[in-house]
Image 1 (cartoon, rainbow, N blue to C red):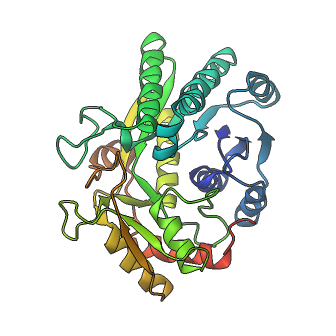
Image 2: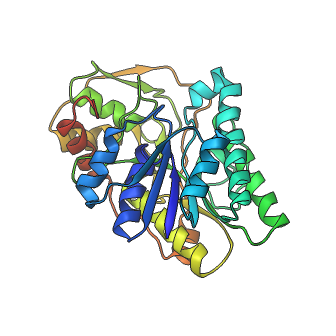
Image 3: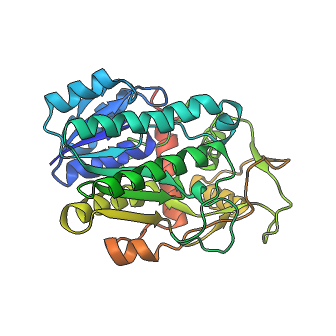
Length: 336
């Protein structure tokens, strides 16, 4: 098959592209390089032995989408392109709705014109909002507490309405938790532009000397050590979930909603200690006030994904930290 991967040079997209190529698929990447680097293409080739087709452009640009669907015999689309910062979404909601919602609509409309109706969507656990029970199952009420989560929920609703209007659409909505880690080669990993929004790349940049200390946002949560707890999942496990979802749509049903997580929660301090062990460094910390829109704890119930996709997360916290440190130590300035 030929798979179009939007945002395919980004963190999760690039790891999924490697697995798609290893799985024997042909990959076409669409990426505007707003939070990624062209060098990732070369790294993907070094790992997989195959240079993916690359098109530079924005998913909202219909002329580029038309060119892709007319130039390649696309069988399915994996949609990673979008903005993902909770803080930036709060300060600039119009940009987030434009990118994440209008971008999805433009892509789906051009897919419909090209009669390509296999779609795997990168959603988020942020669609659940304040936990009414834990772990989150797919039946948990959906009530995002930030703009980013709201854009994901709106895109999900569009997909459900689309499938209801035309059951020929085969759609997988994957709600994933907190991706961390890197490819075991150390050639690709998370390289955020500017100040990292996520904990692991910030930790790694402190360990490699790019930043002076790690800010711990809130130490008075109702958790064992007072810091927030999250369900961290290795990016390679996340990527394999997308491969499993694609296979599921090809062989079985036409609509899937599934959590991709480990089912375990880890506190900020637990992650710090695990990373210190992996890097053999002591990381300076600074405790600061909580960020708005943050929850004390959340984690997945991944049983549905295990049941329908035969998928489980395999990599533990030590492996996540070891792979993240290998990536950062081999690439202290990221892809630059």
